[in-house]
Image 1 (cartoon, helix red, strand yellow):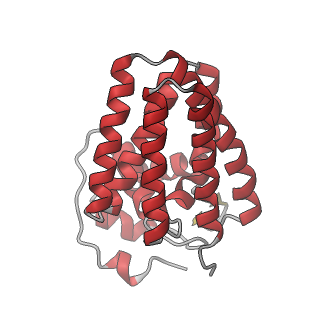
Image 2 (tube, one colour):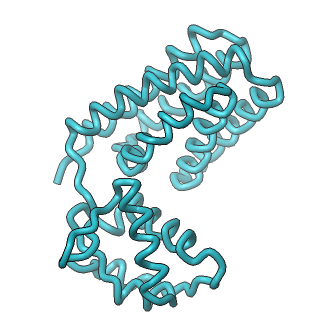
Image 3 (cartoon, one colour):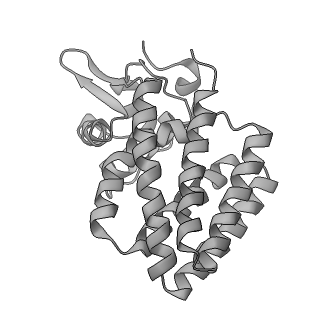
Length: 227
């Protein structure tokens, strides 16, 4: 299947020559996360080169990056196809990810600098504002930053590498979760509780709340209607 009409109708936005592959991969990643490119859909390279105003070389470099992240598959004689994810796969990954983030929360509560804790708290306040404005894209961006800051504050390179190696496998599912009004409100409250636990240096509670938060995120994905 080629790009949908919605993709074809997107206004062309030429990309500058600096770091083309990186910029293209970022745009394609966002298109996949937002559902402009659907699972099972074949990438139309000709249309994308026209849309981005680039040659096929940087586009194919970007496709390799996204293939390494598991967002698409490079199939010989067919090209790039957006990957499908089963609930069984997501369940496995989320359980591991939840445990890793729980450990990150415990370590951050124990070792983070005061400035790092304050920054996570400030970001959580911004998260609340994006929720109140119903700005889903900004909410998701800040959400990702908060989780990244907690990992950094844990000061454990092994943990960070393990987390990075699997987190991208659920990135699309996290963005496209069935974010009902009730679940969204709960998610914000969960983040606020996590920030409070970190400020209190409550090691056990920080880990417990992060693990619960991730597992509840999977539940919201599991409840999303399937195609």
